[in-house]
Image (cartoon, rainbow, N blue to C red):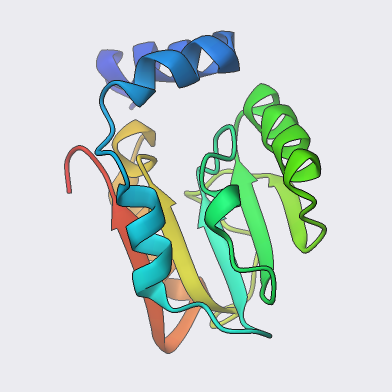
Length: 149
């Protein structure tokens, strides 16, 4: 059962993506997204999954040589992320409306997994983390930034 706090968070995320960005920017560690993507050392040809892509704040830091699947459960957030990808000229990203607690990919499908400020907003976030671990290959890399982790 989803907690009241998680339901409120999810309602907030689904209302207005631009308002979401303005408010959440105040709570994020400046430069953390860029540093995480840099530390992951994403290489050309690698397959990367980002759960909870939201409005696509990480897209600007995606190395262009890799292939990305970016998922979110919120259609409005994905629409903004797609717009942002077009603004940045990113054509190596596939966006999917999907629940992070039930990833529709085979085991070991990705080289890298990313979750930035997503797990704290996902009900049953331990399940989402297990799913991320399942789809990232052994010895792959997972990068997380969050309020609670």
